[in-house]
Image (tube, rainbow, N blue to C red; front, side, top):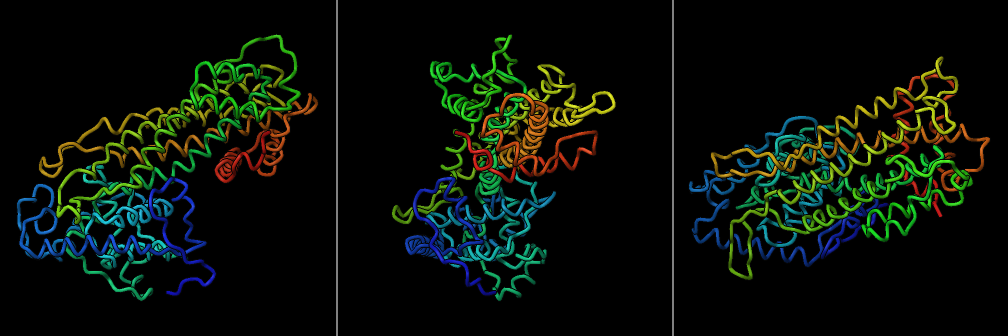
Length: 507
């Protein structure tokens, strides 16, 4: 299969990767090669491991069984690695999204290329070939305990290397891997000592979910501030609680940033500047910086954990040629990510929880707005039932936020007696995120409807007016009751597909 001539050929970045490094690597724009430094590291480590394996020394995962079978010596080293992939491909459930699988491939290449895993250069290159060609393994989402890493999902991800499993082709066809390899002109690989273990040990599934989610979450954080400001103005709320002095004396970075963002969104609003007879708003408006900001602080802490893991080596055993050392440890254990996923799910939930409360307030018939934001309340129910949906999603999120990392299971006949459950935490966080995006989208619908009811009032903030104009291109003013589900879906797509700063451009 020939590469598109329109694509540039580049070298994967060396050194420390940030989240932005991962997000900027685009297979639609470029194909990537390993650097010469990475190739040298991989080959040196692989050669050292082969020399050790040839000396007859008993080394876990190279010439022994796995898990509780670690005391069983095995002579068929190639068959051992092949059987490992086959036996561990026990995933169930829906396939992981393709952008998550693509991230998993990239993260696995990053880990293996650091020269402590003992794999052959051809094996790492084949993973990168899959990424470059957008020939993506089909990976069921469930089956990982996050113990020896993500064994089952990673086994499915690497089965195509030996001609098994399934892949999704760039044109969307789902094929048995053997057919796909023949079509591409790629030969199945024969795995050498330790290679299967290096491929399926690691945290790339939970980290892949987390990295793709984190990009969406950073956008959701911006939308929470933007839509919250939109609702504040539409409900005739007070800007005073956003004053910088309040947040400076508490000195939480997230709250300071959220307050700044909300002030920027309402800057120049004649509506917000109007005199009021009341001096306080309910907490869902008044405490936006404190709540939104706390979630921002969690997000930044999780980002630090993710970036450390992205640059880590998480298979086992690890090889240190310069120290003449092969050592079995536990870098594959997902606990750092498991705790991070639970924190992140709760942080995302809180954006949605507060958003739904603002929606509820805007439907209350207070502050000059009609009940349920209906043009003719009584005959029309307006936004009564979208709030039900938002409340239902928030309630579901509360249940999903029960920490996965608090659970445990005994596996591999007691050898793996404490597991992280980080993969389950990642999947739950992913679901919480999808719910939160819909809840904030419903709030945007209500903020836009309330703003339209104030057209005869004084002017909106210029930045919020930009949001209003863009939103009205996809969701119209509700003159009378309509089927709301398509409108709610359109609103979510608008939220997910746009950066608020590009749509509204706050001061």
